[in-house]
Length: 257
Picture 1 (cartoon, rainbow, N blue to C red):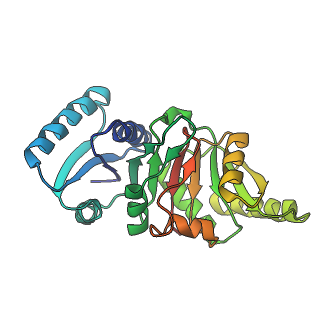
Picture 2 (tube, one colour; picture 1 turned 60 degrees about the horizontal axis):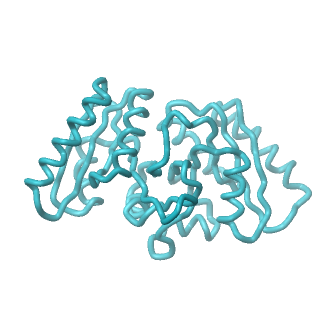
C-alpha cells in the first residue's frame, strides 16, 4: 500500500481539522490516509456519519488516496488491529479547545495513544492551518536519542526548513551557550538539517518558560520526546498528566526514541 497516515475521528470539528491537516501532509509526502473510528454501539449511525465524512473529504481533497475503517472496540485496540495490516508512519489526531482563546488542550485520548504506541503522534489544534508551518521547535536536553527523534520527525514531516532547539534551565549557566552551540552543530551533521537555531529559557515553571519561548520564536510545530526530565516523563504517563496547555496555533509531534 505504501506510506500510510492514520487519522482517528469522532466526527467533531476538531477531528475534521486534523483530517484536513493530514490530507495536506499526505499530498506533500505521497501517503495514503486511513480514517478510523472506534465505537461501542450504533454501527448503523456510524456508517452514515462515515459516509458523510467521506463525501466531504472527496469534495475537498479529490486527489487523496484514502480508506475509511470503523470497528467496535476501544481506540487503541482498533488502531492495533488495523496497524497489523497497514503499518502507519504517523497518527494524526485533533485536540479539544479549552475555555477561552488562550490555550488548547491535548486530551487524554491523544495521550493514551501516545503512551500506547511507538508510532509518532501529531496532535493538531482546532485553530491550526497546515500552511502556517514555518518554524519547528524541539525541546532539547542534549541527549543523543534526540538525534534519532529528529530523524524520525524528518521521515514523517514533508519539509523541515527551520528548526529551533529549545532548552529549559532553572538557573543561569555561563557555559550554556557554548554547550548548546556545539550540540546544534552536531545535530546539523547527524540529521542533515542546515538551518538550526537555539533558544535557552530560564525559570522554575517549565510550562510557562516553554510557552514564552514558543511565542518569542514563533514556533508553529513543537516536537516533544521523553528526555528524562520529570515534566516530559509525565507526558508519556497518563496517570501523572492528562493534558498540556500550549498556544492555540501550535501542533505537537510526540516522538519516542
